[in-house]
Image 1 (tube, one colour):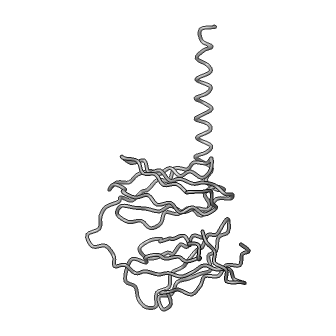
Image 2 (spheres, one colour; image 1 turned 90 degrees about the vertical axis):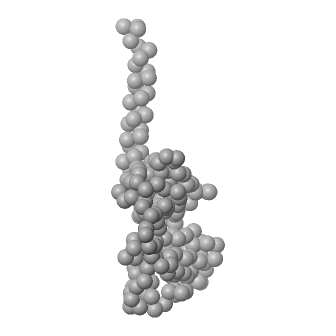
Image 3 (cartoon, one colour; image 1 turned 120 degrees about the horizontal axis):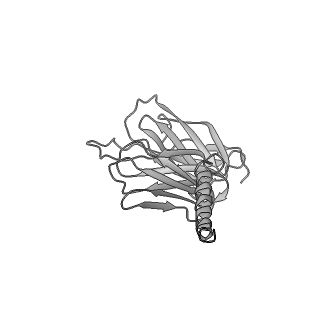
Length: 205
């Protein structure tokens, strides 16, 4: 009986590690709110999400060689871009604080014969009452080409590429994540988008 006991501790330890990872990989709701893959190109992709508290986030592409992108400091709103992706569908591991999530990419990163014409849109995100700039917000625009996104800089400014030609009457829905808040009542109209009118948020920075 004494010969078997030394093998029990590693077995128990391995079981606990597997159980811990299983819990971490299946709890996406609080640390990965409003998760989206955006800005997909033949070689890059950006992952955005909101944490329920200040966390440092990372995105790791399980490719060869692996690709890694991490926040420089803890934040609520994560905007991480992976570059140099190969023409294949790959899984991505996202980290938000102590939480992990596997994000399966089901499309292939294949170069396009004729990439869409650039179509820049830009503007600012400010507070509704004092028009104070809101840095660190994530602006996400849904287009026929997919979701495009950008963080706001210290002046609250953002810029995205709508990537394509559209009718002058086209209107695109916009969502904005700032800290742990999520706003869905904004749009970009091609009649007013260079620059777009200020997006105003009812928040107290």
